[in-house]
Length: 448
Image (tube, rainbow, N blue to C red; front, side):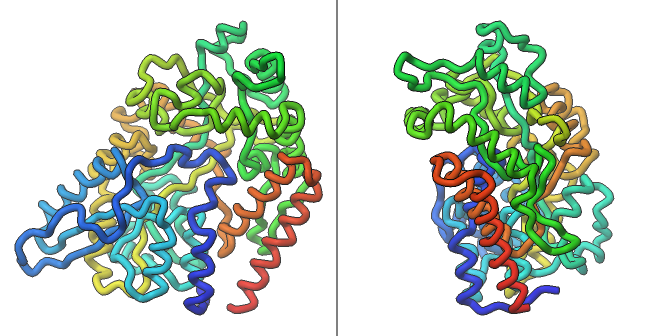
């Protein structure tokens, strides 16, 4: 069951909010463009017609914000009883938590990452949506099972998303051909990846990095690829120091040890902006790049001549094949809003098949509904179909459902960095992280 917690404790959670994606380096790896300050109207409401005014805060900005605004405008035109005003809080996620804790939340928030959903629900920050969904006959049958399950905790539905991602890799076919690799057959295993990297890497006479094949990073995903995981829902215990997780971190660390942490830092600092033709993948600095299906429209926007294709996570012997994960923005209704029914009506409208399809097609994201995702509009593109096929497979895993998942990501990031710098072994780094996150979970549970 959810627990009550003080405003101070709720705000303490905001100190790590929005940091979780750093540990993967994969999910949502596309930074957004210019932001609009939270609370600044994007459109003035029409003359007073007695309609309910709904404040909606989103984590999207730039072109994605503009595309979503079109749907918001369409909703406003079709629903005279409610007017939605949308603002972006990209990079300002603490504002969401502060507003909820202060009792003055927006009516709808999609600036909540899936991995934060349980943390916010467990702190009484969100309104359970189960009664609303049941009233409207929304039972999850239309959604991918992993996604529908991911929005639930303690037998309650806490949000709905209109977009999801597969986590995969793009690779440069032209660079593969340049070094004599088969551009129709990217590496499938860790052993094959190591061998491909030996051909793809370019170092100058001083050992400075000019190009890499795949520079592994993001222990959260690689631990799972190696067959491990981070949390046991049955025992309610973290499992950071499993042998598979340690092996994954040792493999990541071997690249940093061989290439040198200073040389890698210099290489990373010299890369261009992601949202430009100087993106390191577009510029040919990285031949195998972690991303997802959304990369399709970034290629179209910034580097349409890029010769690329998709591949899955390379796996070790005994590891998980065709692994992928998902996170992303979830539409939620904070605790304490005055207009719960109209807020739910807006979320439900966005979740309609046609409206969801329009938004996902503009974003080039996978629709959470199976029939929409597998329609010709999406899978007629073989690259998009590749990602849908991976997402619909057995290797799809959601973020752990814990009230301290942000702390998990923060501790894993610190553990990985210690191994990068050579200050800890993989075993010691994960044992230390295990102690940190288990202590945080035990402390949370002691207050329930």
